[in-house]
Length: 196
Image 1 (cartoon, rainbow, N blue to C red):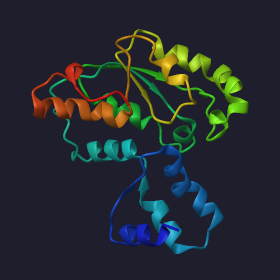
Image 2: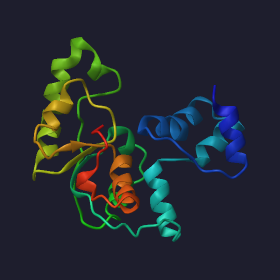
Image 3: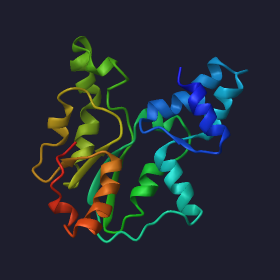
């Protein structure tokens, strides 16, 4: 189990970030329910943050550099269920809104993935049926970028990314574009990075 090395970091005052919302939820909420008397689990839980929750907190403390030189354009962002149940608010949205020249379309409903359920062949059709409204909402307004946080069922990327301008990127990649553009001198829409 990876709790002992993480607990050591937590005891030394480090914030711990998990890039996948289901992992953040597991460390913050689920492991403490399974091991309520374990002090190491408690220490890790208290030190664990969703990355965008952490960025917003650092911004409130005046510690986050936000002098971006280029915007993201129109971004459709899907809020995964594992983020919603953490009850931290829409921190990814808040962080992406710090980038000037960015318009967000936030989609907050089930995409039909449900962990491994949506990727199993026997549930694929049902998964696609459940996710169809999300795919439609993600393309509303002709966004330049799609930013799903959680993985999508197989085949959904082609439905969501059907428009030529529509690039699939995680919220991390969205935030990296204005930073990379500042250092490379290239506008973000001319990035040579492959779509994720």
